[in-house]
Length: 169
Image 1: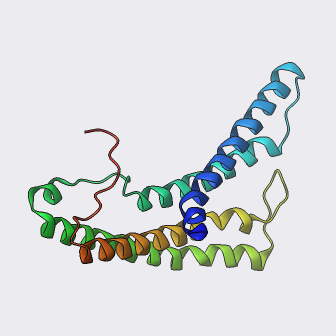
Image 2: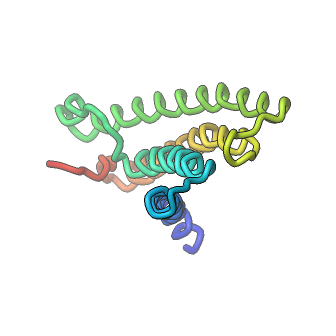
Image 3: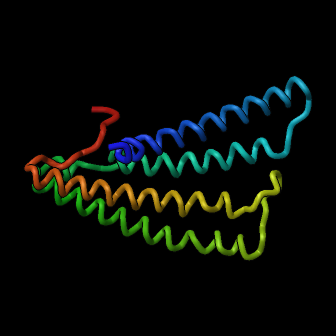
């Protein structure tokens, strides 16, 4: 029960953390630039990399809630069986893409580690920030597997497939 709650809330807390970091960093930099006539080298860089992590974690959260952008005209034409099949095809395609992109995104991280590249402003390892992509695709892949397992449980109970949270009707 506790693991389930952590699983459901983990992305939300990470998103909140990165969003707060972006707001705080940009606000400090604006004050420094206009009030003190001085800006740091690391501020813009930190906000940029926090935004990259924020985007990848949000993508995984959208996959979990099936709230990502999709065209579901064909899904809505059929009954529950057609919807289930369409969701399975969509989930399998997303999983294949995520695993393939995860595989491809590891190479730049390893290259950065091998050559010791650092960011220009913060002088931190570039690999820390390049890891956002493999972490993002790993989260996406795990969330797709979770939704597929949830669909199996819903199917066994005779329930229709979860069609996601809708932003607009």
